[in-house]
Length: 347
Image 1 (cartoon, one colour):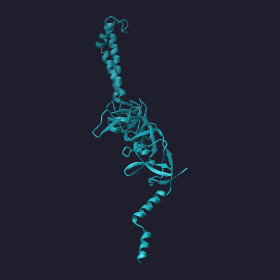
Image 2 (image 1 turned 135 degrees about the vertical axis):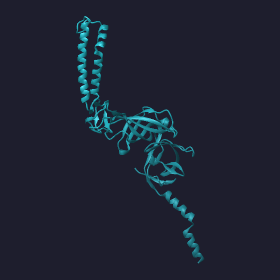
Image 3 (image 1 turned 120 degrees about the vertical axis):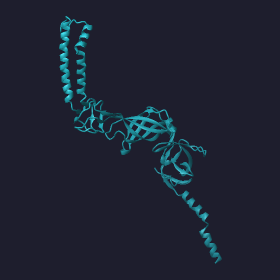
Image 4 (image 1 turned 90 degrees about the vertical axis):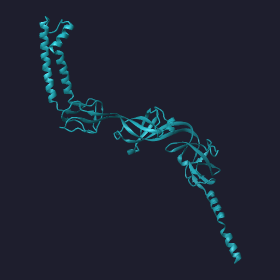
């Protein structure tokens, strides 16, 4: 019985010995991976922010003359050119005042001619000295009649509300047969200004004229290019700096006030660039697996820059490691690799 017990213990082995055997099997198990050769290249640094579209021009339109709205020529969303007629108010009173002013000016011309004849000049005004003509126009009421006619013409023109610039009609408030007050908004959305904020630490990577990519949250598949136009020279209490970029409106889906994602791009030359899939975490550090003699050898790295799909890496300062150009690293199927795991490179 004693001999049988010893034989059983020898067959089972200790838990530590069993764990060592499993680790050895894991290392010796061959894993198929894809690799890449490290080389220096230009890294596209990206800063991702949230922003909002603001139309190039945005004006609240009001009626120049008070009155009752008789006709409206546009509706929300319509595009108009500069000078297009938007709405009309009742013009009967203005038309009567214009006719009266024309008659008053006609009477003033007759009074002026009588005044000149009384002074011994031709009633047509030919040959009359300038100072004499000026006094005659004042005393005959001719100047006053001219001013009144100009005011009457302006009052009649003010019964028509016209677009001060080309744009799109929005937020209309007026209705036919109601008192004219506020008409609505006119938006020039041929271009959009995009306002967003970057961290103080990211400011060194942002400059006027730099390219940005803008994508609406409502349709992330669409991307529009623009350039940074303004950088506010102050840092707020949250450590943010306001930045503005401008994009051209090439899609009717873009509207004023829309929330968008902004990606600021900057080229950084001379970086070792790998896809994000090539970098994994081990012991709280970033590592890549180099392939040496058909084995995966992990190397600690630091991530210097990151964008949406890639990392720019260097050797790890804390671990004193180096990354050399020309080394072969694993870029896929590396989540379960251990140091020394045997690998087969996929063609």
